[in-house]
Length: 350
Image 1 (cartoon, rainbow, N blue to C red):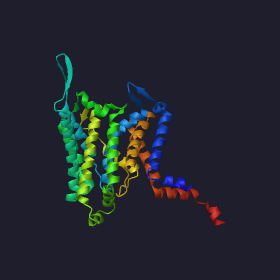
Image 2: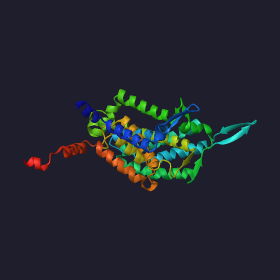
Image 3: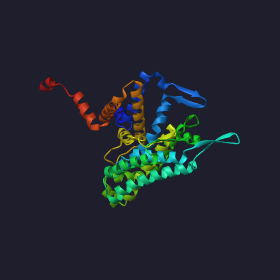
Image 4: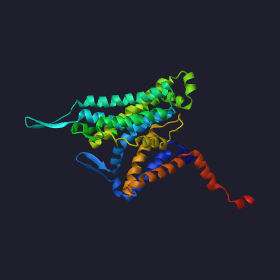
């Protein structure tokens, strides 16, 4: 009993149970979900598709986790996704030319330069947010709201309000390629998570981030460079949004300044909250945020697979998230346990 209670109190228990329950529900309506196929050297199936589509959200959620851990929030990540995708698509462009009878894809600028430019601009966006929060002293939601509005406009200006199509095949490998039989996007998300996990767990940086989230003033008095760490955290969040933008645009082979990354900031915040990170700062879990992102993507797949009309899927999504958040609340579980185990009034009167 004690072991079961300890297991239930583990921060990753409820996110993992929620994910398993959603997968089971999805599989009940769509048995083909669990079916995996090895075809042409690649692994295909519903689970692989969920993991592949969740990769951009995982990246954004990892960046958002650190921002929230320092008592902040970044609602501009969706706009940064659109900016990064637009820059990459415009710089790569691409066309098919035939030289000596051999067809060859040619990009407008070298692909490494386009990727570096897109990620560099995303990094600058995050840096801008960090400076407004840590140096100017703006409230995080106000500081990032500025870029959320302006960034979407910048993306629309870059693309002239149109969908920019990419015709350069090597670029498609980032979002559609396979490595060792699995989607390449999975390796990118896993590599970022592993590097971040090692950095935060093997160095004092994780404790510094926690200290800033719990009490920024006390952290500064203790010698923690709270301002510099906060700026770096926002810059990292912007970089992750830029990387997610590359995955999205590569996957759809185009960039849409109007809709790329739309509402992704809300999904990222939901993923972080579902994973067990405290929105008030301090306690955070990277693995939980990854599980939260998978829950969001699985929930989306479930909604589509059971035939819920598109006009009500956001309501269903919100209802499920509400229930999950209630179950994750220790106070609610305590109240529920007391309500269930409370003896009837007649027995108390005797």
